[in-house]
Image (cartoon, rainbow, N blue to C red; front, side, top):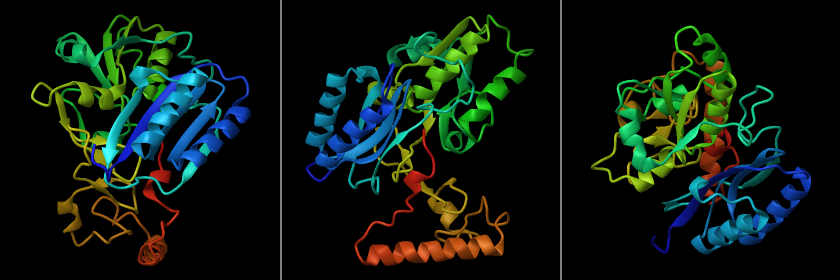
Length: 312
């Protein structure tokens, strides 16, 4: 890590929390004192978040989680960035730390079988294994494991409905290997599928981020880049900032080639959404971009950052 880099920690832990509001106050005070930015979600079922700050301060936060019994070494992933990828700090109370929208799903009580990154290639290379990408379409569009199927969801809340629609086509004894960005969605998704009677459900421990950290790029079966929920947009196979930007009109990842299109207007539209946005919407986005540029000229951070629009 270089001196001018920031540490970015993606973490979660399913654990019973009796007083979420008290924990919220404690976490917020600690992070403010450490000058750490990002988002933390707290619910009765646990904690989930992505934060960025100086390496020493992120290490302090890791120890803070350990002392609270909310740290999991397999689910605390670090990457690095040359800029602070979050505009501010938010610690929110939620009903779920990752919203699947179906009551009774509890990864603490029931979950699929964890698969270490070192064993993942062997598993998904088996012919009788169905590889399932539980992420959303905009994430899958820039990278995935070859042969993986994706439910064409735009939100994780749509996943239960997709599974219910597959009950007649996916046998309950089918081997299913699922994955997501950091592992948390698979915790919920595998718990759901186990609850529905699927017997052989496996999921990549620590998600894609853990896989890219542990597996040599020469041996990796990952294709493309990994979408992340902050201003970096995507990470490459070495967990460095990738080649994608984000369209502020539709929030889809875009390439440098997309930016050469006549339908690309910075902060307003891209080839994916130019024909679907009304003139009123385009004007509103243009006004927003103007405010962003003004804030940048004043060396201020505009609060309407892309990292606040979508969460893992």
